[in-house]
Every structure is written in structure tokens, then in C-alpha cells.
Image 1 (cartoon, rainbow, N blue to C red):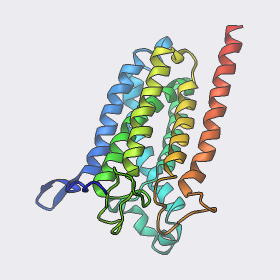
Image 2 (image 1 turned 120 degrees about the horizontal axis):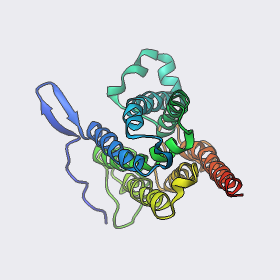
Image 3 (image 1 turned 180 degrees about the vertical axis):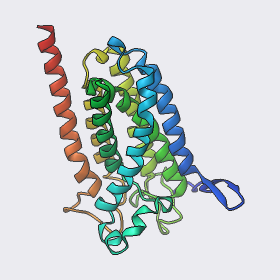
Length: 268
């Protein structure tokens, strides 16, 4: 017993030869709502840095980091042989293919360079940015579900779906699991840390919580997600997503430890 897969056209709007896809709109919604939320968090920042102007100036760099890093990460982590044979195809971003871990690296580089140039405390800026990322993750995973891609493994649970590109078998809607955990739940956790527990005064805690939280949720959902056909499992039953998330989790724990220890020293 499975649920009928919703008949939603991946193309949200057609204007002659121009097609606007839900996936593109998901990116747009994530950037716009994330930007607005970042401006709200900037008002809460101690010492007035980063300012709202800092956020406005950083957004274009963040967009560039997500797109370039996400595409480069996909090419290097998931399809190296394909793009080694046809290097110019790596520039065809309109054909799809983005990796979150690559996009994260792109944004991290943008954060370091921008904070250094503007003389902003890096962890204060990264706390705001990381608090906003789950918004984009939520919409992105919903778009993955609409596209019928990145689906889960075969299952008999009642909330399974037969995906158009997943063969005749009912599968876990792993995209929705990720939208819930990496998107809604992680957003709520970071909001509570930032606002309720006042961790804005401990720069780095929210950043570390995002890195560790995303990695933990991603590694968990990978237990239900179908590995990419051209990669399969990397080691035994371990997927590429889990391999890439493990160092991210360790980095997150390290950042939290550093932030807490530094704030204790400041109190002394």
C-alpha cells in the first residue's frame, strides 16, 4: 500500500520557450526569505556588527558561493569521470546537478573572505548565515520531491510513494524527511539557540550546531535514501552523503567546543 505520487509539473510556469521550474523558484525563495531573516537577526547582534548593510553586501557573495560551490562539489564528488570526459558540460548548470556539501564549502570561503575584508568577527556573521540556511534546505528538498528525484529506498511503509523514475516499487519519500529534519526542525533548533538561550553572545555555537545538526540529520536520512546509481555505496552500506557529512559533524562539534571554551575564558 502506497500513496499516489502527486501530479505536479516540475515546470511551474512556461513563457514561450522560457520555462521556470519549481527547483529554480525554491532557490529564489530560499535566498529571499533567508536574506529577510538574516536582516532580522542582524538587529539582535551585539556591537551592531554585522549590520544590515553588511548582510545586504554579503548576500550576492553567498549566492555565488552556493551556485559555484554546489556545482563544483557535484562535479568532483558525484560525477568526476563524466565531466573529465566532457569538461565543458560542467558549466551547464541549467541541466541540474548540485551538491550541498560543495555549496557549504563555497559559502564558508565567501564568509572568511568577506569577514576579513570588512573586519567583522567571522563567527558572528556565520551564526546569522547558518541560522538562515535551513530555510533554503526546506524549499530545496520540497523541489526535489516535486521533481521525483533523490528518492528513498524500497519500503512497505504506508506513506511510501511510487516515484516516476524509481521503477514500479514503493519508496521512502526521503526528500520530505530531509525537508522536515534539515529544514524545519534544524531551523527551530537554531532559532531557539539564537533567541531563547541567547547564544548570540557566544559566537560560534549556532554555527557549530548547524554543522553538526545538518550532518547528523543527513547521515540519518541516508539510511532511507537510495544511493546514486552511478556511485552506489562507498564502503559497505555507507553512502557518499554519509562520508561527506562525518567531517562536517566533527567540525561542528569542534566549533561548539571552541565557542563555549572561549566564552568561559571571557567571563573569567
